[in-house]
Image 1 (cartoon, one colour):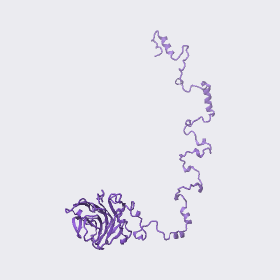
Image 2 (cartoon, helix red, strand yellow; image 1 turned 30 degrees about the horizontal axis):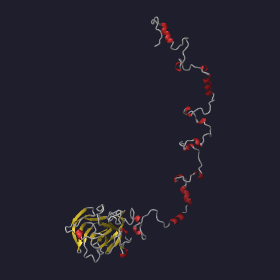
Image 3 (cartoon, helix red, strand yellow; image 1 turned 90 degrees about the vertical axis):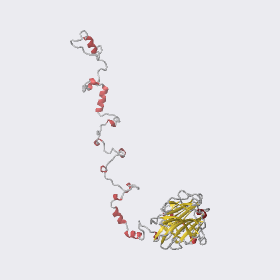
Image 4 (cartoon, rainbow, N blue to C red; image 1 turned 45 degrees about the vertical axis):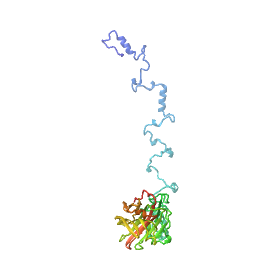
Amino acid sequence: MPRLPIPGKDNGAWGDILNEYLSQTHKSDGSLKDNVVTTNTIQRGTITEDRLDTATRDKINIVGSGNIADDTIATAKLQDAAVTSAKIADGTIINTDISPAAAIAKSKLAPLNIADADVAADAAIVQSKIANLTADLAAKASTSDLTSGLAGKADTSHTHTAADITAGTVATARLGSGTADGTTFLRGDGTWATPVGSDDPLNSNGVYWHSFACMADTTGLVASQNLPTTSLSGRSLAWYRDVFYGENGAQQGFYCAPGVNGAAYCTQTLPGNVKWGRMDFCFADIGSTQRHAACIAVSNAALSDETAPTIDMAIHFLATRSTWAMTMWSDFSLIPLVDGPLSLPSDVSKTYSLSFQILDANTVIFMTPDGVVRKAVDPQGRFDTYSGPYMVAESYTAAATDGIVLVKHFEGGTGQPPAGLFKL
């Protein structure tokens, strides 16, 4: 590395060492080499204007004289807060110069006189923003005209009882949810529902049914000419004894009035021996003795004054609020098979069901209103010999102190039952 000679040392090499050291920055003629003087080697503040070339001096003098060409200084070249409002000429900022996001406080705006034409037709101005609205409107209103105009009008909020409906009919949409038509019945939960037997009740799956909510919309004893003679599945219907029709809230059906002939019957004729059946009903009136019963039966003839003494019933399945019994009927008397207790709540809006399936000549399974599936056995095979194509729905009352059983719907078939037969 080049260095200066060291006094007292470097004998005989002084000249060579010194020349090597000086040759780093000097030419052989003693002048400085090119580019050896840089900005790092010039002391700050030592270069005066007369040491600058002419072009550089002219650029500096032009900036100082205010002769900067238009559009030559970018925004980024301005120091923050360098331009004050005092430097902006009055009236030079227009609406388009103000950003939509500018949060200009209302206190910075001059008072405005807003005329009607300044307010948009769809402007949603709240009443609290309009001065003297109540007083101004009161001065324009005629209390006498208002009083006479409202005379005899109903309150904006009021209720009606069922007794207020004295004419016309109630639309099916007001009775329950769902679609009301010839394929549905009104369940106890207020729903128009398809019978459990089939999505297509018109016999394609061997299901035959009828809803008693489709009867005439009268309450009380039904004239014989008003009773339907054909089920909703197209099968014949036969009626026996005095049949009453009623409504219990959203529930509708036929019943036997307490103390009137003891029972009311509806028989549907199927195209073959009945193999299964179901009946939906409710206890529409509790009564004091509570011997009123619902019954579904399978017989070898339609019930009438002529057939009653000799009719056979393979199924005679009945229930009250407190008991159930699976029996048969022959020679005008009951043949008990199996029975048991019930404890049904006093809920007149609840729908109950009786359902059964004949497995063979000796065995039947059935569901009581509490949802329990049970079995009955007849060693004599009378589930076959007493059977027939007639399915019977019955509403029974033994005395005037009994309540009412409202029969809403029944269905059955000659083949295999649907999966929902034994569901509540």
